[in-house]
Image 1 (tube, one colour):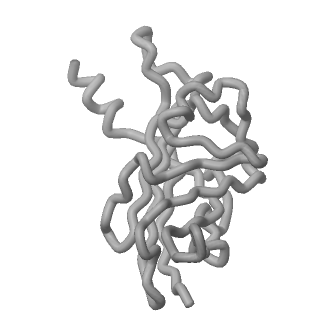
Image 2 (cartoon, rainbow, N blue to C red):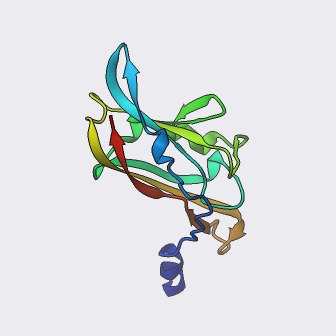
Amino acid sequence: MEQEKMIMGFAMRMKLNDEIINAKSVRSMYINGEKNGFEFDVQLAYYRGHYLSDIELLEVYADGEKMPAESVTFELRGKEMPLYKLNYAMTEFWSQVEPATIRVIKKGGLAAGKHSLELKLMLRIPYMALGGDHTYMPLDSGDAVDIEIA
């Protein structure tokens, strides 16, 4: 049991990209002509790609406020899906060099000025089993950046 507790507190981290969150890609989203959200591009922080079903956690924080999961979507190669569907995307492969777009619906979007943006992104590495109980090596592919909205 003690060994299990130690494993749960460990996550592999390999930041191979200069920016996991592309700070220059952060832009406001307009719905029916009104600012109602924001979007940004992300890349994996690992040398191998992953199937979207390997995503264990995806959370977005703007200025320390957690965005509701139902307001966040994930788009890869023109396929956009809500976060709860990522678990079922077993045939959608995300390459390390391929950016994905995260969209957040937020009434009024982000006001002009400086903001902090954080992505918590945890994946499981399916070929690195940690035991016989279907526990796999966790991979931290999250990032935080300071941005400015015009």
